[in-house]
Length: 160
Image (cartoon, rainbow, N blue to C red):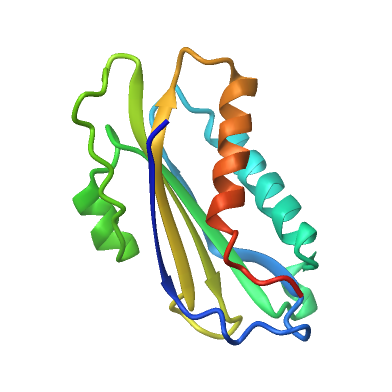
C-alpha cells in the first residue's frame, strides 16, 4: 500500500474563469505489457480524472471549444519503463523503493497527470505518483485503489 508522490508547477493561474478543460492531444500514454489493457486504462483514467475535475467545478469540453486547460496523463509499469526513463521523459521521479516487496505479486507502477495552458508546449503543473499494482487483486479492487490515487494526485487542484 506504499505510495509516493511528487508535484511541481504553479496552479496560481487557475480562477473561476479557467473552469473548462479538454484532453491534451498527445499526452495519453500507457507503457505496459499484456497484463494491462491499455485501452481500458485510458478509458478509466479519463473517467477518474473527469469525475475528480467535475467535483471541483470544472467542465470537460472538446479541444475545439477553446478550453482553459489541457490535461494529459501517462501510466507505466516498472518492467516497461525505469525510473531513469520516467525522469528523462517527465522531469520527475517519485522514487518509490521496491525493497522488501514481493516482486512476483506486486509491480511498481507510475502515474503522471499534467496540466497545460492551451497554447504552451510545456506543462504548467505536473504530479507523478508511484505505487504497487497487485495483479492478484480483482479488477474492481485495483480500480478502487486507482480512483483513490487519482483523487490524491489532483487534490491540490483548486476548486472553481
